[in-house]
Image 1: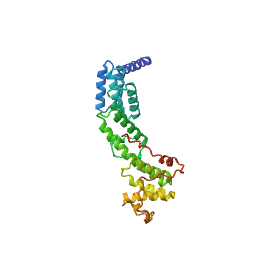
Image 2: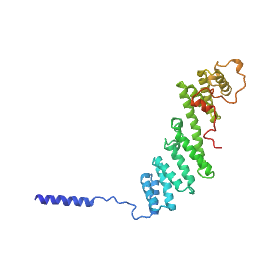
Image 3: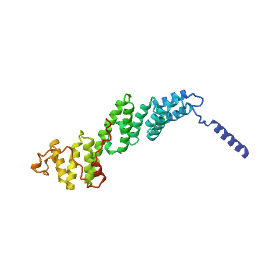
Length: 292
């Protein structure tokens, strides 16, 4: 009786095992084109994980063909949309390395620019809801450089207009970041560093609204450093350019100096300052974001 029960249990186990679903690859027996079409459908239905898997299979099946190349690009897009920015960048770099003269290189650069910044925060994808100044600027500058390469190599690309908008946004936002850094130095008594950050803002962004704040930081920093001449030079510029600024009512200046000629530009700290920031400001360089 016991043996009979044991045999029944074994038979039942075998039966259940036989009824268990088999994880069969759904792409088996399909052509690369069919798999590619299904991958595109997954993208449309926002199933990016599945799309990435299918694009991988197309790459493998159609290696060395136009379809395989297209699948690689589409996989990078799916990775980007899936939030896998590091993987998207790796896929795009590999694509451009293997196909340096591919007709879709402009698109690869455009997508790389977006992914480069989104790898940090995703701000460019959403546009404007948060300040870039609160983020790591290295990723933003990297994205800018990629877009700059796109404009330089493919000035007639259909992706150029949007790339220009993104570049303008990055540049405008980075000045806000520089102001915040200068204010941070000022509040903590790093007056030379604060002055040099503010000075760089005037060099890099002379037409930006942040010029007023930069001048104010310069006046306060030089006053704390006891460099009266530089303080007064910048205060004269501030008074004449922004008469409503609270510092414009400052009593730093003697009445005899108010009509003195304006300097061509606020001067950097004296060369005797040994800080790196002071040394840098003595040698103004072309702003990183200017390519024209």
